[in-house]
Amino acid sequence: MCGIVGLHLRDPALYPRLGELIAPMLDCMGSRGPDSAGLALYTDDAATPRYSVRSDEPLDWQRVAHDLGAALAVAVEVTERPGGAVLATVADEHAVLDRLARDVPSAVLVGHGSAMEVVKDTGNPREVCERYGIAARRGYQGIGHTRMATESAVTTDHSHPFAPAADMALVHNGSFSNHATVRRRLERDGVRCVTDNDSEVAARFVALQVARGAGLDDALRMVQKELDGFFTLLVTTATEFAVLRDAIACKPAVIAETDAYVAVSSEYHALAGLPGIAQARVYEPEPEEVYTWRR
Amino acid sequence: MAAVTPVATTPVATTLSCAELTTREINAALAALPDGARARILEPWGRHNLAVGLGNRISIEIAGNAGYFIGGLCDGPDVTVDGFVGWSVGENLMRGTVRVRGNASECAGASAHGGTVIVDGDASSRAAISLKGGTVVVGGDVGHMSGFMAQAGTLLVGGDAGHALGDSLYEAVVYVAGRIASLGADARVEELTTDDVLVVKALVDRAGFDHVDPENVTRVASARTLYHFDALGRQAY
Image (cartoon, rainbow over all chains, first blue to last red; front, top):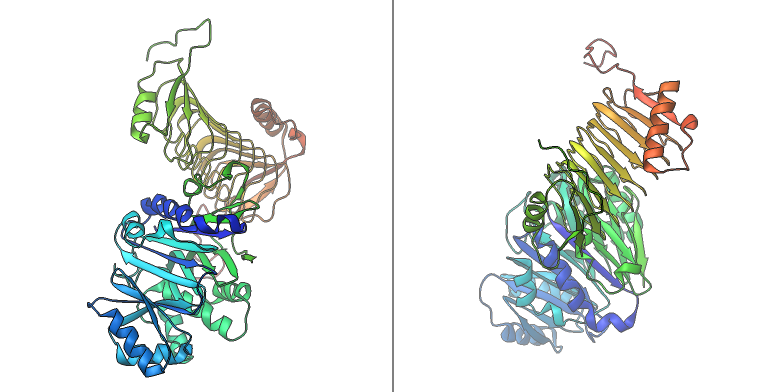
């Protein structure tokens, strides 16, 4: 089944409350996906680009940050997270990613960017939010996912969001049937998937179109042409927040819009606790229509 | 079944709050009410499965927006939702009514065998899918694939119908007051008879929809070309 939630804040007065608002939404959608959960959270507060990394093996993240800084001759700040860390550095993106892949092979990049931090883990969504202190997070935008795995294993790497490029994240409710074909096509274009998850293929497909110059909205229209399956997709960049449902539209989605926010969820009751929801314009996204909001 | 005792005055409504009770507790409390009783469900906040599987002749008001399967599987009560509902309102309804004062999401009245689902606003895709004898009346528009494989019963749409209306219809009949984006496979527009006008008039009177003119609706029914498999028909196999 899976559940998705998203919150794009328009009113800066709500920025300090991003985590406090989105954590209960994710908890509510735990009924649709109890096996794993994840979030991509966006903030203006970060001074330097950040790399969300995790490892199944215990790693000394202070040491990882120190060695990375020494190798690249720049400062690397480290904030430890459960099973991982957030590394902050102004060093060149490709240099950081190459170094991490070469020197710390057990470290997995969960997401990176100037605005975005990605958190994901297996387990009950409420417990995941508590473990990572989500309710206390500030920010202007967030998307989240509660997973009920159907197409691939229950591991942290297989859970959502998938963050295929700097400041880009995707969550998916549904399943893609031709993901193996599209994965092979992506490989021919030099794009490698890390897992055998179907949603990762969609995320990397969108990122490839954007890297080639497409707008996020056009990239999502190309998903409709290339990928076969059932989906409600929620995709974010540092400035955009987009929703798309497939033609059959058998995966649900509800949007609530007020002057203060745009909120999306698989089901209305995850939105029912938001401030001003009684005055919100609540509607379902039409099939095959790309909805995009920009800040 | 015992005869319903006529009541001289409106009975006092039993109130049940979703903020305090689980869905099971609410449905058990509703099932325990005697025929003729009234109940109000407060603070639904999109809660699923409210007022389902009830066989008593009671009236239930849900005071706010509710979730999936509202009033489903019921065989008797009259349920009113003062708000919008999620998927599959009145799903598998046997008897009684479910009235939604707002909009309904997908699959409104799915597989209803009897009874009536009335949606004052719009219904989303697949309204009255696999209808089996029930009645679905929508004041506004319906989404794509409405009436899909409907076997018996009536769907009345007061607004416009989305794509693939009535795909693979059996013997259910669809009436549309507004425009039809497209018909599904084997669905066709048929001439409106005086009997049709009477059927539609009875439905709009019951729903109180004065925006629908019973003489100006489009009748959609099955062309019955899919009833028998014809391997040679289009040389497709």
